[in-house]
Length: 312
Length: 307
Image 1 (cartoon, each protein chain N blue to C red):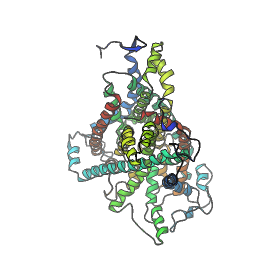
Image 2 (cartoon, each protein chain N blue to C red; image 1 turned 90 degrees about the vertical axis):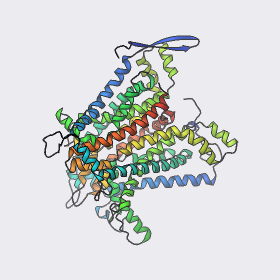
Image 3 (tube, chains in turn purple, red; image 1 turned 90 degrees about the horizontal axis):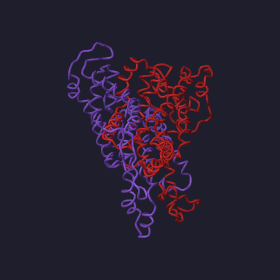
């Protein structure tokens, strides 16, 4: 840094004349530093602290600290539940992101063609986005209740006899119920981003395709899809990062149970760190998971940088 | 910016499609399908609203009561501090709604403003300046955002206790600002990129400083983008649970989302009280989104979300 000049010069040509523009190198630093400092204080510093704790035997009950090296990490990798929870989280992410995308793309296509009532439709569509994830959890836990839940009640009204399906208890059903809640909450975001993408497409290529007699599918496959790609990429990136952190909804609906049947990675961390009071093991586990999501984030955003900034 | 796009091609009559062709029965059928899907999506929200205004005996019955027989606003009255009727079951009476409302509003609004200010500045730097460390700074911001609230809650709580910020509104404001800066910076980078750089250069040639050019040229043009980022930041703060439940302890700083938990007991839950509080929580969010909804779409269609 010390060797850098105080100002950078950049030439801009206008009407045959070249202007030399001086740029202070301190301005970008001054603009970036406040935001970065806040993030470091709130995220960076506590994460360093929990990294330290992950090498100790710290618990919430017994507050004495002993360094125990990598013991927590060894326990972690020998724990079958951790592996299962991790795999289940990956499966959950993959299913949720793809289903939300397909559903979102379909609705966005329909929405972009509507002439009247678009504002009302869009506001109704966005309402699930305004629900707190914890509220979505309570709400769907209640809907999927085996005795008095909305879902079994609707089945009752449709078929005429009582169904007592234990949605939140049975093995694939619990996972599916959580998935439904997450789809309800996450699809509107996909719709909004993809609809914005569809609305911002230039109109001329579609007119030309109409003149040439292209079918609806051909127009979608060869015009909409490739031109929509940047929007698709953004929507998928944001949602997968959100889904990698999925916690509130599962915590309320099943808390990972019964047993560990619907355990996802962050409910398991919570179970160990808070309910089981094994905070240092919980820290180790969140560290391993955070490092893996770092890799994922790093991969996504180096691609973002490449496509958006083209190296500058 | 000036390119002809679908969004601006508004056709006044409802009898024609966007492409200007006369609407066929297929078009009407397609719109009907869309309305059905949207109403299905709205159903869970409607059920919450209906539950909050029906008599308690009609909740959790089998067979279900679909339409409330009478309107009953008891839960709302209790949340607004009216005395509990004789023999009524409502857990809302013990909840200091006014304090929670104040905390939630102050924390969400102030941290959204801070995140927008700092995130917009950072986004502008990412969009307009070239320097070696830029990719690294950008990446590390995004990486720090990948840490979920539940992993952060306890170490942050311990840190906040040490520096006297636990259970303080100011502590929550700092925490939520940090959570929203990276995403805002990312979105704003895109919105500033959608503003042609030539406008900036012209302003600089005419003698503007970088700062005045930012304030007078780029910022006004990227305002729909600020509105869009504002919606996302506000909703995140307003609805956040994992951090708030650990860091806020009393009515001095507790926000609405952890308060929902107070309607659940070990044996019974007060569903009507919970849905009433949920509706109260949703109202400001709906108003806020309805106000900036047009700017949101405008911002997002400017092509800024690309890549």
